[in-house]
Structure formats: structure tokens, C-alpha cells
Length: 227
Image 1 (tube, rainbow, N blue to C red):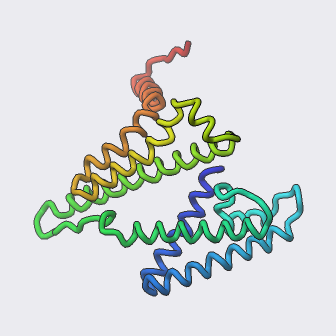
Image 2 (image 1 turned 180 degrees about the horizontal axis):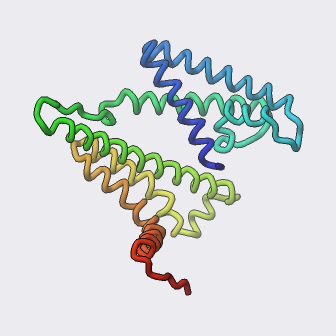
Image 3 (image 1 turned 90 degrees about the vertical axis):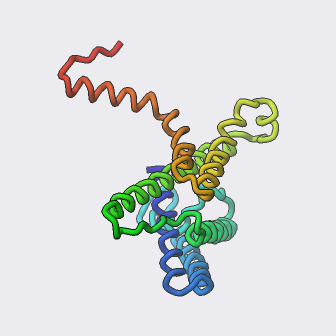
């Protein structure tokens, strides 16, 4: 739940921005979004002021929804926490707006006049959803890893200079996402999916192998031995 709830909150904020910009236009939608995020942030701060220390109630949970970026922007005094959450919400909104308005991420519409139109449309949507899923998972894992590294290292530059092996896991996810986005934007969507899915399959291969072995023994009825 530690990572699911922040992703759910971010999805709600992204949905709010998309609905506002599509219904009211980009300019008005952004202004209304910024005001809504500011009002929600202020309401979350008001709830925190009235929350009991050491006790989790509905006020804390609602405040967590209104202040979803606290785990990333850090703590501090309540006014600075509110300002940082509001700014993070605006940056997130601009990023979502860019992704929504960019032609790079739109699904091509297939002509369904021939017999293969519906099949091609399903294939395109499946490719689109799969690619976006890989991007979101990679970005979420990278942000979680980056946050863990920054919070546990008191001197980041010293750690990076001494432990060169940590550079690869920090730099690989954004480079993979950038390469996948570039391939999709230049007309190679299948290669874009392959590049984005390759590191996820590599990391999850042992787990997938264990699940496959368990399913095989369950289907065939053969007993399993765990050493």
C-alpha cells in the first residue's frame, strides 16, 4: 500500500487535469487545476493542524490525499510543506498536459472498412497500453529507488564517487524510457515496447520461472520437492 496509494492519488490528479483541459481549454483548465490543487493543499494543511499527534484518523487519510507529494518533497514546517506540495502538483500537471497534448503518445486510428480493421485497432490499443504500463512501472521503480538512495545517503556525491556500481541502476531506467519514447515517436512502436519491457522481464524472470514451474506441476499433478 505504500506505493499504491501515491500512484492512485497521482492518477486522480492527472484525471482532473485531463478533464478540465478537455472541457475548458488548456489555459482555463490549467488555471482551474492550479486553484483546485491550491485549495486541496490548504485543506490538507488545515486537517493536519487539527489532527491528534500519534493517532491516525480520517483527517490524516484525507490530508494524505490532499498532500500526495510529501514523501517526495520532504517535510519541514507546515507552510513550507504546503508550498512544496502545491509546486509539485503544478509540475506534475504540466507533465501530464504535455503527455496528453503530444502526438507522440496518441493511438493511431485504424480504418475499419476492411475486415482487419477491428483486429488492427485492438492490436494498436494493446501495444499502446502495454508500452505505457512499462513506462509507468519503470518510472515508479526509478523514483522509488532514487528516493531510497537520497534519503539513506548523507553525502550523495561522496557515495557516487566511491561506489561506481550504483551509477548503472540510477541512470538505466530514465535512459531506457527515453530510448523507448524516441523509438515510438519515430515510428517503431514494437521496438519501443521491447526496449521498455526488456529490463522488467530481466528483473522478474526468476519469479516468472518459479510461477511457471508451480503451474506446470499443478497441471500435471506431479509432486514438488523444495530443497
